[in-house]
Every structure is written in C-alpha cells, then in structure tokens.
Length: 285
Ligand code: SF4
Ligand code: SF4
Image (cartoon, rainbow, N blue to C red; front, side, top):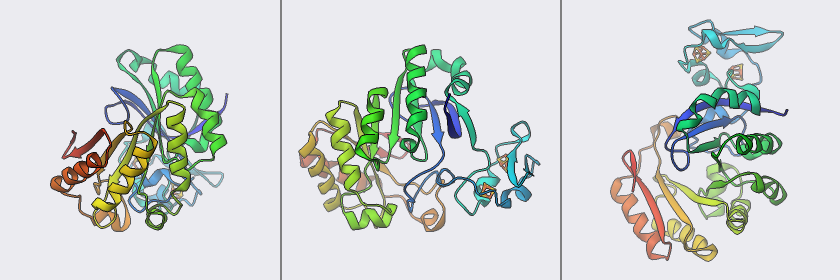
C-alpha cells in the first residue's frame, strides 16, 4: 500500500464538507499563502531540531539526525508547530489507507463522509486514489477534497473518477493579486474549476474575504462573472478571514465586518449567481 504524509486526523468535523465528516490533513503545499490558516502543513520537516528543545513533554527526540515524535508522550500543546521556522511539523506520519481506516473505523456509523484537506491534497494523488477506493469499498461514506486547484489537468483527470465531491479555493480573479497572495498564477485554478464542474464533481467554490485584498465589490464581481460563465448554479462560499492560526503579518489583520460580507453576497447574487453563502460570526448563511 502507498503511504500518505499525514499531518493530522479529525474523526468529526462539520465545517469540511457536507454533514459530519472525518478529515485527513495531508502535509505539503504548492502555495505559500500570506494568510494560511494551517501554515505548519506547507513544508516537509528538514529535521533542523529547533522544536525538540522546546517540547515541554519530552515527546521529541533526535534519532540518527532525524526528529522523532513520541506520540504517547505528546500533550498536543502545539508548541512545536509554533516554533518551527520552516512551516512544518515534527508530528507528520507516513500512514497507509488501511492504517487511517483503522483510526476512523469506530466513528464511521456517525459520519456522512471523509474529507481530505491540507496542505494541498492533490500533491499526493496515488495515495488518494488508493484511500478513496478503500473508503468506497468498505462503506457508503462520500469522499471530498478541499483543493487550491493548482494542479495539472491530467492529474485532476486522474483523481476525479475516485472522489465524490470537490471544493476549490479561488483566492481572487486578479492574477497579480493572486500571485501576491499565493505565489502562483490563478489560470490553473480557473481551469480546474471548469474541469471539476464539467465532470459533475464540483461541490462549491470558496473565497476567503480579506480586508485590503479581496474585500471589495469589484473583485467579488469578477469572481461571480467567471462562475456565472461556467454555470450560475455553482455554489459560492464567501468566508470571513480570521487571524486564528495564521503567522506573520496576517496574525494582526482584522476580520471583515458582517456588513461587508452581506454587501459582497448581494454583489455576487446581483451578477447572476444563484447560491452564495457567507460566514457571519461562527455560522454560515
Ligand atoms: S518540525 Fe520544524 S523545527 Fe522541528 S525539526 Fe522539523 S523543520 Fe525543524
Ligand atoms: S504538540 Fe509538539 S511540543 Fe507539544 S507535546 Fe506534542 S510534540 Fe511536544
């Protein structure tokens, strides 16, 4: 079996796809977003050892010049990921689909599905194919990916037959701003949205609303125009930026106001999209 690089597993989440879902967070990303909410999933550990000395529970040690995580001693205080200078984590594990299944098996009767997030899941497609096939063989759970959409067309075509639902994160339609926010162009993301929709797997498109960047009606209008050109029935989720989990300058940015979110929702609906949800405080409407 192929092993995935696993950062974290949750056995219950109501915010990562429809219903109650187990969520598998994969390690590694091809973006480097200014406001990443999981910055410790971006890079692979380079075994520098900085976090080892900081662990208050002695749950980290160096073995043969590699950091080793002693899971049984870990208190999940997250000190290690906060001090890592390389946007990584010493707790990443190589796990097969079978091992993950054993970890979520007891929760299956209470789940609607299994979601894969990250990091960027589509950097580990061979593992995902095997994992999703195992889920479908052993249960009626739906499978779901949260992706930034920055992937080659042939890679997307390889994974789509194995997954039920896909959410694509579209940061913005302005290519220069997209490069500023993520380090990469938006073109491949747009192409992925078209392709996933054409194959009937697009669950939603998500855009994070960030003051001074994407919190303006012109940009939301561009997003809506693009999605309407693909299909006005595409579900757009406008999500309020929150500083929790971010690092660097983003940690001191303010969240947009509820009024701003409502105005942007109205703008997207006025451009012809039929379903536009927004996050207000802790809920979606
Ligand atoms: S997790 Fe970060 S701080 Fe710890 S050894 Fe790896 S790169 Fe260094
Ligand atoms: S989360 Fe990291 S720092 Fe905290 S106890 Fe576990 S290994 Fe140590």
